[in-house]
Amino acid sequence: MELSEAVASWTRNPFALAPAAAVASAERLAGEGPAVEDDVGVLERWVLARLHLAVRHDQEPRLSRKLTARLPRPLRDYRRIAAAAGRAHAALSSLEGHSEAIASVRRQTWAACFGEDLLHALRLERVIRDHDVLILGETGTGKELVAHAIQAATPAPKGTGPAPQSAVNAAAIPETLVEGELFGHVRGAFTGATDARPGRLRSADGGTFFLDEVGDLQTTAQVALLRVMETNVVTPVGADAGTHVDVRYVAATHRDLHALVDADRFRRDLLERLAGVVIRIPPLRDRPQDIVDIGRAFVAPFFDGEVPADIEAWLARAEARVHTWSGNVRELHNALRNLMLGLPAEQGDTAPDTGEKLPPRIRDRQATLREVELWYLHEVLRRCDGNQAEAARLLGVHRSTVLRRLAGK
Image 1 (cartoon, helix red, strand yellow):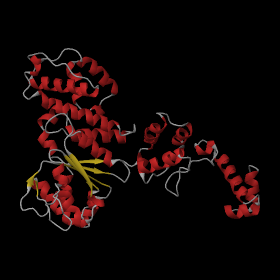
Image 2 (cartoon, one colour; image 1 turned 60 degrees about the vertical axis):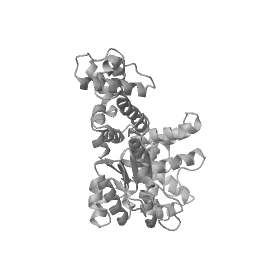
Image 3 (cartoon, helix red, strand yellow; image 1 turned 180 degrees about the vertical axis):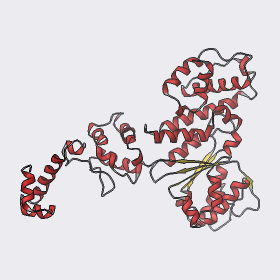
Image 4 (tube, one colour; image 1 turned 30 degrees about the vertical axis):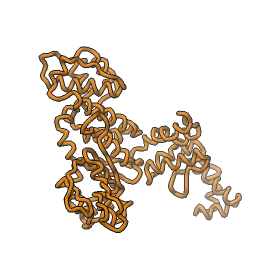
C-alpha cells in the first residue's frame, strides 16, 4: 500500500472505508514518514494520520522532530484534532446496526464534525464550528446519541479533551423560564433569582450546545435564540450588557419543522439557520436487520457479555422484524427488559407478539397455505369447544365448508 493511501485511510471518513483497509494502512503508517522534500500538506496529513492511529490504539506516537519542526502549526493543534477524531469514532461505533441506513448516519455525522478529512477539520475549524446541525427522527430513534457524538467530536480550544458542552430539552422547560435557562440571569432578575446563573449557552462557550425537541420551543424564545445565533452575544435576563459566546448549535426534533413553519408555529429563518447540516435518523421499522445487533448490545451487559438463548431466539423471530416499532429503539429496549424479567415482551399493543402460540413453521413464515388454514380451523374449533356450527358462524362460512376443509377438500 502506498503511503498516501495509508494516510488517507486515517484522515478521511473511517465509516466510508472497508475495515480491512484500516488494518493494512495501520501497518504502512508504522513505517517511514514522508520525505523531507514533500509538500507541507502531505506532512500535515501524515502527522494527523499517525496521531489518529495512536489515539484509536491508545498509544503514544513516535514523531521525528525533524519532520514536526516543519509543521506550520504547533503540534498540540494536530493532537487536538486527532483526539477529537478518536472520540468521534468511539461514539459513532456505539450506534448499533449493520444496515446501510445506520451506516449512512455514521458517515454523515463524521462529515458534519470533520468535513472531507482531518486536515480540513484543522484548517476550517472556524467554518465547521459556525455550521450548525439539525437532527431529525421519530421518538426513540437515537437522536440524542448522534448529538452527543457531535459534542464529543468537538475539539477543545486548548488541550486534547472535549470542548465545553451543555444541553437542554425545550419541551421540558416552562415558557416563562426558557430565556433564563438558555441565557442565564443576574441576581434579582425575577422572583426567586437569589443567585446569578450563567445559562446553558454561556456554559457551552467554546464548544457545542444541544437543544433537544427544538420544535417545542416557544415563539418568543425562538426570536431570542435566533438573535443570539446571529450576533454571538448573550444577554442574561436582567442584565444591561451582553457577553460574547462562541458556540456550535446542535438541535433535534421529532416534529415536522417545515409543517410548523407553514402553520406559523416555527420561524423559517431559525430553521434555515439551524439546518446547516441535516441528519435524518431512520425509524427502526425501516432497518429491521439492525434489531438483533441492537438487542444483543443492550442485553449482553446484564449477563456478563452473553445473551440468553430465549432472548436470542426472540430477537431472531419474524415477529420482531415485521412489527412497526412505533417507539423505535426505546420500545425495543422496553420489550427486552420485560423478557429479562420473565414478563411477556408485549405490554398492551406496544410490542410484538412473542409468537409462542404459533407453530414454528407458521411463526417463521415457512408454512404452506394449507397448513395455516388447518391450524386456524383447529384454533377456532378449540375456542368453540368443538362446536362445528359455532365455528362456522365465526368463520362466516357454512358448516359443510368447515367439514370439507378439515377433510382436505
